[in-house]
Image (cartoon, rainbow, N blue to C red; front, side, top):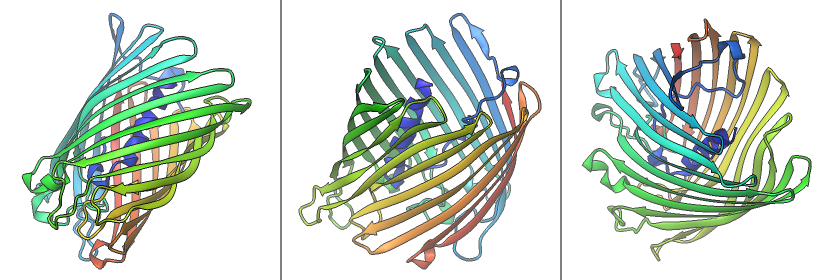
Length: 407
């Protein structure tokens, strides 16, 4: 469970990255509700290491592959995602290694074909009964999704490709009353094309959280954070220095992974401090929430929300503020049938240009477990974006059938 919290923290860090780091993430099929023990994959043991191979093969229909406002182009895509995970647990030390790839091949529009991949290592060490050390590093080849707020709108060149190098470290202490957590991370984002060199970016971030138990599994927490962004080319084509620092703090509640409610929610302020003296500094609301409600052992309701400063490379924009909200439900209808659905909202404001975008979406999935090794899933996704710029509006539906194998 601790490793899952560490993974969740990595996801939050990715949400806070600039839109230039968004891409088609390699799919994760791990739900909150676990399969019954008789259907869980057991892996292959090699000494003290357990290998967990898995793969997905998907046939997907996309009604608007370029996320265009008019005359959308549809296509059928075949997606293959092989993956292998290695785990080692010695009691006080837990290590994990993940290697995966994703091959996307379009039936008609071959220029959209892409191959993504990742190699990631993470671990945690119980320094004592009350202290935990976490760390991780990795590489990921991401493919920009055409529906991202600052994605390429040139159909003939294919989607942007980028490499993300990451490193994370954290230490936490949890006493009967007080708790303290320190976390730091670094990201290097390199775009494959020299034409996108103005998007290459390094980010460094740190966070400190102090908690006090106020009763049961609930703690009041205070968090301070700092993020520094260094673009490889400091100045854009208009001569503006885009480097900046963002810092701030939030207060809220944290609920431990027991009982029917878990996660944390905080709210506070951030201050954006640009390096260029011609750009104005600004202060805004910072909020972050990741909560899971379990009314029964077969049902889970999830809530993820974020509001804060996000870097931008859009021409004419000085900064960007995103507000995202995601509400989902997972249910085990039967021991071999799992259902899930979610609704999504994102509001993006480009400071300086006066442009705003709003995206709403929904998705649903049914997964039927055939046996310990195989399952069959059907998924549908819908997204609708409105924008002050007509060319940035789009409507998109994607539906797929997927065969999943776990060993």
